[in-house]
Length: 314
Image 1 (tube, rainbow, N blue to C red):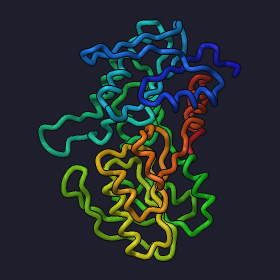
Image 2 (image 1 turned 180 degrees about the horizontal axis):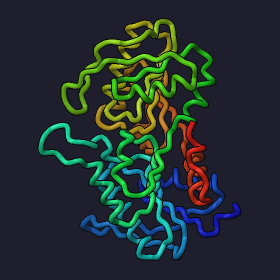
Image 3 (image 1 turned 45 degrees about the horizontal axis):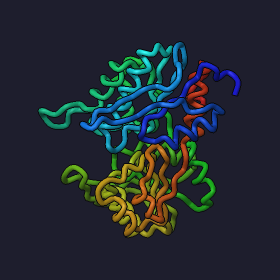
Image 4 (image 1 turned 60 degrees about the vertical axis):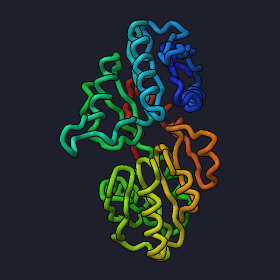
């Protein structure tokens, strides 16, 4: 593709398939990177091409193992900085530690801010991510942040359902996100009132809104242990929903998530490829993966060409 002569795309080890797919949409090749570990676990990074004066995009979600992938990303950025790259954009489709964005009890860190400091000190000039858990995390950075939304990917799929749809937020914190989807689909809105007893444990209480005889879509930014999502799905089933789907941008899927989803009331669980699914997670027949590669490719080309990124927002 013309206009990409000084554009370079690199990938850490977290999601090479996504990086290659992005390159396929842009029409360029993935810049080679040597990624090795010493016997004591230290990471060794070496960029395989000259990047002096180039506009470089590093694709690396900070998914599990979170700390390893975060450190690998910082080392990639540092290597590019020392190799005189003109601009370094960290493409972090899934931003780890995002749930720790404020102090909710005494004597705890604000981990999302610390991660922002790590990336900034390493030498990053710009961050590109998808569906931040908390939008205010953008304020932790003193550089441009492109918080893209996976909505265009999901909305195209939902419009083909053809049923009377109600979008459901599994908790009060996700109401704004669910309302945005409902508005764009001219669908109804419902909220599951949830009380959390302990970290990674949730108890769904009751439903605000009506799902009787409708197709209900439980919408969240991520699905981790799937406790919240499955409890919300059961509430919808108890309230007469005709068909129940789940939708989450980031398939973290830790702990008992796969077992819970397999036994859940959901007929389908839609996720994106911000985080790759390993062999065990792919055994869940209900999970369908939609790709964000084209969305990221368009955003990268707009940033590289100094064009607006906001035109990609639904």
